[in-house]
Length: 386
Image (cartoon, rainbow, N blue to C red; front, side, top):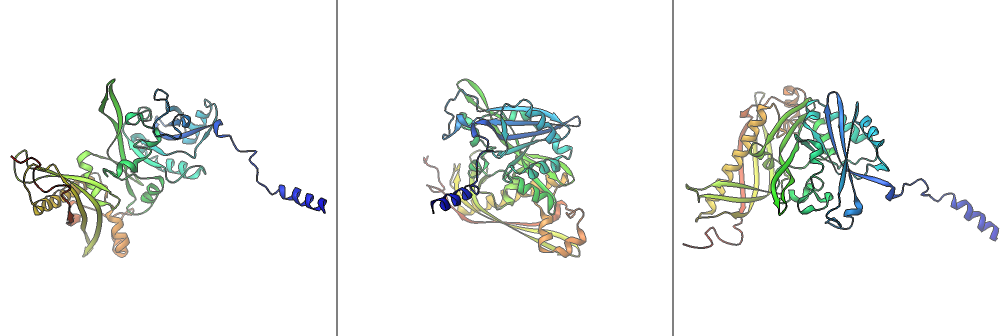
């Protein structure tokens, strides 16, 4: 009987999974970010390897003087070729499963190499579809060595953890590999990436420091790179997506230097309706939002005045961004997709390469509905009365 049990146990042990071929964690380098450039017919790739021993179990590095990451650089005829070249100088195995974001240079976008980048990201089994994607005009090696303010962990940087700061100020919606691929595949086959740059507005007792700033948007299509919109020219994008969590409008009520007011806006809901008349298409846009706090009040104002100014400024920003995008031949609000989903018969008649022809008059009406205004902790009056 004991022999039978022993034989059964021996057989069962063959079914147990083993760990003999698993690489030990301490014998791997963890890639946190990638930068991809294209110059003189070759890809230039940058690999940011992060030191988890320095930041593990802490939002602050254990040793502030220690280097949180190192950057490797290589060239190749393909993206994969460049990384294999980089392997020649790596001491341990590189693990790709921890990549958080990738930055594309303007040259990669201009050279229409985004599709090759997507192929690289989606075909390798360790890659995830939740990798954040950014565009830039800055040198990639400079961007990848910028550490967060107060030397916070790189894993909590604006690029590695964009949703944290996005909840407070939603300028440009972060985009990941999955959404980038969907946007380029579906009408109007155009997307925009957050455009990042190096900001030098911060200082410490030791001098000026650098941080990462969202500068605007980089415009892409399946045909190639369209250009960029920066600062105020890109403000309209935040009012045309339901993903916006919180942003602000500054307007002027009355005259004089004390007539400006800043309003924080949340809970944005956008509804777009295509209007078709004799194969001429225009769009009506309704934007619902809530004013959650009214700031910068320097004189007595009314709810009606605030509401009117919000409506005016939001519509102005939406139209200005649309006008700038039309000049770059870009359907920045994906109006072609709205027609495709709501009136596909008309879309089939008018589309060319997935999108319809747009002009500045393609947006017929913009209705901004401020359904609630919260003055915050006080009324619409100055704190100290004169």
